Image (cartoon, rainbow, N blue to C red):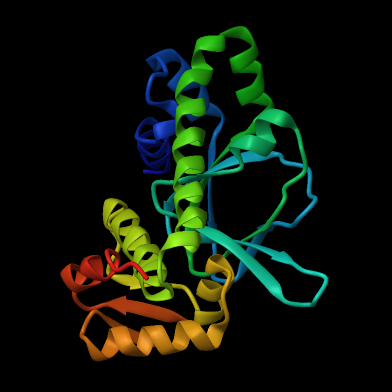
Length: 229
């Protein structure tokens, strides 16, 4: 069962979309499954990378302590997504602390093996670079939205994006983000996010709970992403 999970998680990852069967097999043979409980820290800021992580189930939040004493939440990874590819390839320390906020199943691949395979076959890097570019474009879209979208549209866009990614991974409509984390990701204040979420809840798009947001009507939420200031 564990070997099957490893094989499926690796073969279905966008990172390895163009990898030949023999290369996939090497990864499967070297990878291992790790199940962690909620609030487990996988690594901290400045840790030297050891593994590439693929999320089979659960979620991972990326956070960093700021000089002000507050935590900055940069984003989150969901089931079917990957974490650590940049630091693993470049052998550079992790920028963020990675914390699993719920029970999460990870498939981890040794970074040394991944680098060695790419050194011997440069073509393997193509799908890795494609996946990294896709993620970078998503991050740029979120930050560009800060200049042209209302806070309401930005919150709706963020929640809609996470919902779509969650659905792709077979998850329910619950989004495990606190209002403080949403505010951190969007560069605004928690009080502003709270006001916007309450308005969205009154209109039937979401249901606000402690530490999470339930999507009540995805069609209404999608319409809210189209509102400009």
